[in-house]
Length: 464
Image (tube, rainbow, N blue to C red):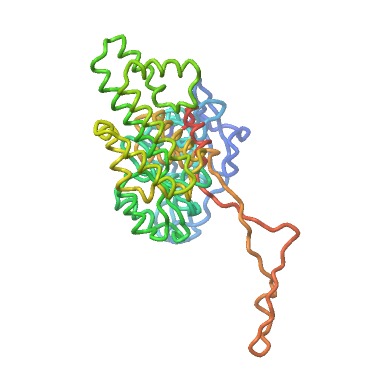
C-alpha cells in the first residue's frame, strides 16, 4: 500500500466505514472516517465532504456514481509520527457524454500523492536540514525531497530581488570546486554565488544586475577574469584590491622560506617549526610575550628566515601610509632593499604589484573595513563544514535562503498627493505639485543580501 495509490477493489477503508470521528487533520474539506495508530504512523481514512455536481468533461449535471478507488496520500507528520491518508475517491459517469471521471481531492498534490501543505513544508525544511533527515521524517525518498526542494528554490529565485550594491565585492569560495562570490561590501552581505569564476560567467551575471550603473566600486582579489568582467559590464566602477589578498602574498613568502629551511632540520626541529608557523605569520605587534620569545629563537637560529620575516613586517607597514602616493613611495623603497634571494622569495608579490599597482593603491582612497574582510574570510572557512553529497545548486540555495539570515534595511517610500495629476496648468506655467507625507516618513524594506555573520553562525552550528 505504500507505493500503490490506486485500488479499485477495497483496501484500508473497507473495514473502517463507521461513524465519523473528530477531524484531527485540520483539513476542512474532508470528513475523517477512522484512525489507526501504530508505533510510527497514523493511518487515517477520510472522504470529501462535498461530491461533484457536474461532469468534468462537458459540465453536464446528469451524473451518477460509478464505483470508487482507494488513494493513499502522505500528509504532515503528527505527534512525531508519519501520516498516511486513505481516500475512497468516488468515480462518476456522465449520462450526457458517457464519460467517467473521479472527484478532485482538495488541497492534494495528486502528482506527488501528498497534501499541498506537506509539499509546502518539505521545501523550507530541506533548506534547514539534510535531505536524508527530511525524507526519513515524512517517509519519502531523498529524490522526492530533492525534487520538491528544487521546485521551492526555483519559486524563491523568481521572486528574489536583492539591491545592487554601490560597493560590490568579488571573491572566491570553495564549494566542491572554486566558485565566484558576489558580496555587498558596505552591508557585509552575501549577494550571490556563481557556478564558477570564468570571465563569461561573471560578465553575464554583472550585465544582468538591475541598475548596474549604480555600482561605483568593486573590491576583488587579483583574478584577471574578474577585472575583465568588471571592465566589460561596469566600466564606471573603480577596481580596488583588498589589502588582505596583498598581505597574504607577503605571508606566503615567509611560508616558502620556512618550508625550504625545514628540509635541513632534524625531525624534532621540523615539528617545532611546523607548530610555530603561526608565530611567523602573526603581526609582531600582536604577539604575546611567550610568542615573541619563540619568534626571537627562530630568528636568531635561522637568520635567513629572520630577514624574510623582517621584510614581511616592513611590507605590512605599507598599509599604515596615509595616501596612494605615499604608499607608492613606500613600496619603491621597500623593493629596492631586497637582495636577489629575497626577491625570489617575494616573487609572487612583486609580480602582483607590477600588474595591479593602480588597483592596489586604490585601497587608500577606498579602504575596505576589517569587519567586511573578517566576515568574508570566516564565511570562506565555514564552507568547509558543509555536508558533502550536495550539488552546487543545493549548497547555494542553503546559503542564500537559510532561515533568519536575510538582511534588510529600510529606504524612504516616495508618496505623492492624489491631487498631483489634477492641478491645471496656467499659461506655460504649472502649479507646483505638493507631496503629502504623514508625520513619519514611510519606508519600505530592501533586501541587501545574506548577513555573512549570521550565515557563518548557522554553518558552524550545523544548521544548514
